[in-house]
Image 1 (cartoon, protein in one colour):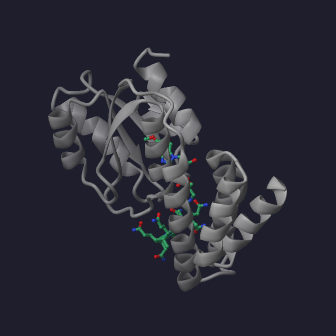
Image 2 (image 1 turned 60 degrees about the vertical axis):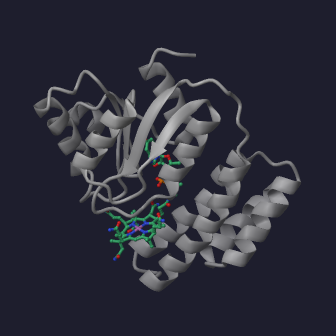
Image 3 (image 1 turned 90 degrees about the vertical axis):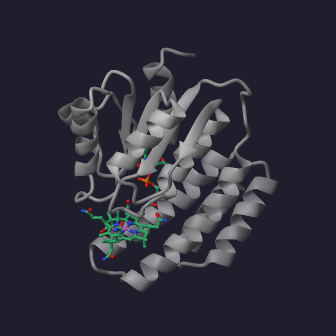
Length: 214
Ligand code: B1M
């Protein structure tokens, strides 16, 4: 049963069919499928396939946009269904997709999962300048600054964040966590970020370990 839903979810994203994506998300949730399973086994393989087709020139920008829009609609519904496990505050996280980058689907999933695990999250959205991230982290009294980058050309902003934190004498005040499809543990180490996470589940674990909790 779940396998069929996962397959339909993947197909709906590849076809750029927003209505079908919403329908499948609703049906999957109604069947009691875990929202993250639905994402990881259905919708994410779909958008990854679209990414591969786009990357190899077999699909073009208008189709990528349609698929992205279908993905956004499904993600919104699924994120809203992620159960909140904890009431108490685990820590405060300021998060954004870096400047020049509008990819925010994955970052939004990370936000939902952090919230569901008791973190207070200030989501600044996408295309956010490093200076703003630091200002908002200061005002929010954040424990962690998280950045997402999906383009090889925008990953540099994660390095810039480390440099600006050091320059402002704030490196010790906030932990930093980086993520996004082209981002790796190696990159995190190279730029001096405190943590890296491959996916949203890992991001929650990493945030907890950075703050020495649970
Ligand atoms: Co774009 N795009 N895109 N795109 N897009 C990629 C990234 C690309 C790899 C596609 C390809 O060519 N194969 C390619 C980048 C190539 C490169 O950099 N070398 C690319 C390109 C080229 C572009 C444009 C330049 C295309 C153009 O205009 N000619 C343009 C750039 C716009 C810009 O940002 N300035 C563009 C635009 C778009 C859309 C707007 C159409 C749309 C984004 C819509 C949106 O986000 N609201 C889009 C999409 C959808 C993609 C792909 C297909 C899918 C991204 C996605 O949502 N994945 C992508 C190909 C790919 O990545 N496979 C592609 C699903 C999501 C759940 O995964 O974001 O990786 P992800 O998040 C994961 C983890 O990475 C991690 O957890 C998440 C959940 O598991 N994670 C974190 C993410 N952030 C984290 C933060 C953390 C921790 C973990 O801590 C803080």
